[in-house]
Figure 1 (cartoon, rainbow, N blue to C red):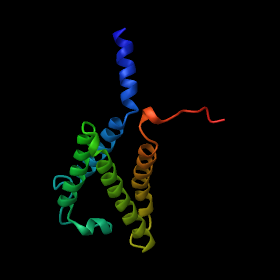
Figure 2: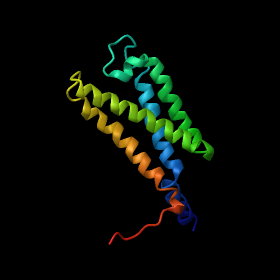
Figure 3: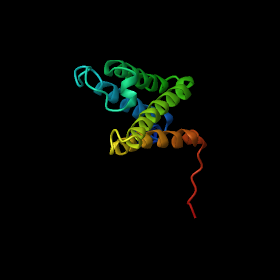
Figure 4: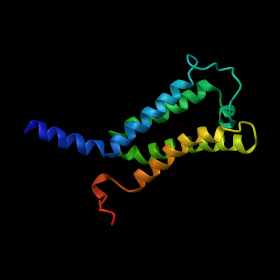
Length: 142
């Protein structure tokens, strides 16, 4: 009986806002870590517009803070709109930066990099725009 209870509880959590925030937070923290001086030369030439706005260590702080905001929002529901908005905004800025790098012929294949950022932002808006799992009605689609 305990096993069934644990399975139901895990299944409920996996479709919760908290699970989505954990994923978003983890992705953002990983992106932030990629901009730390350990992993990237802070003096390197920016590859797209947004990287020229701040240096890599500053972007590391921004991405990591946004990720931590998502993680905090898993426990503090009032933070969910701010966390989702911040992470969607950051991913959207990065996507547009890569798209413009393609449009202005700086990086002809930068649009490919933008797909991941667009995907995360779009799926996040889709998921959180539908409401909480308890509010979503599942139909058979016919």
